[in-house]
Image 1 (cartoon, rainbow, N blue to C red):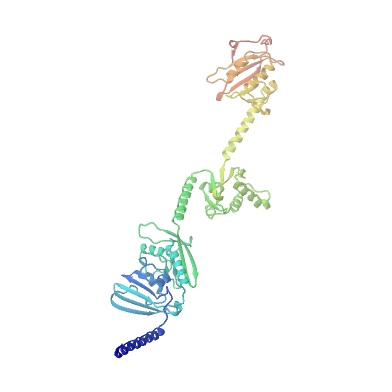
Image 2: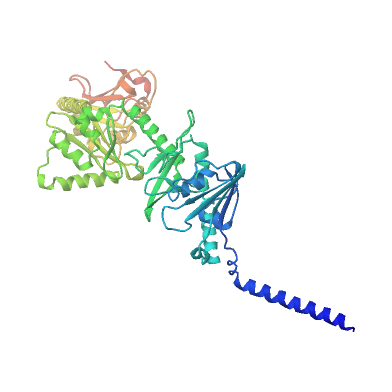
Length: 508
């Protein structure tokens, strides 16, 4: 190789070595690369809609491209960057840098725009670069859980302004009327004092409202809200109220007083008849008194028997309530004013108890008068010397006087079983001479339709001769009257009694 060629080769090698040394020294002076998966938080918007974002930004603010708008990130950052623009910048190329009011990271916000595109960039600090990949995975899992939840969730700062919400809340917000200045539960109406944890979604005119159960938790001066749709519960409660109103209208026309106590022992339903029968004021009943207060007030108004021992009054009321709960309570109260009440206690579903109060004064009075008339009639018939016996349409002995019991030694009141016409005929045959007309008597008693009365002679084995008069009376019953044969009438021969039905004699 010629000397000039050797010189050229050595010069090229020397130049290459110098270039390598320069590159190595330059690389040593550059900072190390960020860990895998760690980058600055960046978001890209087009016409105010999120179309792209870095993993760290999407995880930090729980955002998803295509589902969130500029307003969503503004609500999350407005508390730290009060000058955050209300809308995404657009038009000619420009940039804007904002500084956070607090010292938390990120402390700087850069906004760059060109035409319809707007970039939002939050530079990471060294402290943020130390976040591990495991932490990002956990944050991503939390973001997926919150975004896929069917229940709206959101957070507000100490000033009541929304700083974060999930996808379900954003969907509801797009349906509801726009109200960008609202804070807290912006989408919902103010809870009523009756249901402090129940809110209604503000819908358009004519739309059916949606009801939600609201749960609020405070963490690090941040209010965390969770709303659960309870339309089914509200519909069930409304149906129950309508059903109760229907029952109330139905019970309003009953003459029986009705008092229904719920599982807590408070009066839940009553009708106007209860007010009339108990003389308890309607305001007292409307205040939902307990069972003990209800019965105590009845005692005060003298609408129940006065207890003999007031010390045992509470125990007696407890026994009444326990018996009504088991469906065993049924009593008749005789009041001082002469009225009589029938009280019944019955259990109802879901632990409720119902008391029925009925005025039976008229029935009791009628029964007493009827019983007195029966006793008077019985006493009158017992004074007669003729024996009377009444058989029902089915042939059962239902009534007889003292003379009949003395003559034939039969008493239906002392018999364990019913005495039928056949049972009576066997006694008559045993205690009198043979008579072929006894079967005709049984046929008459069991007969139907129009029946003509008749009589026949009877010859007792002991005592004077008798005449048996058979007559049809009301309700298909039959009256048999055994009266002594008039003086001067020949005593029938016990060995030769009539033997044919044509020997019957019409009754006088």
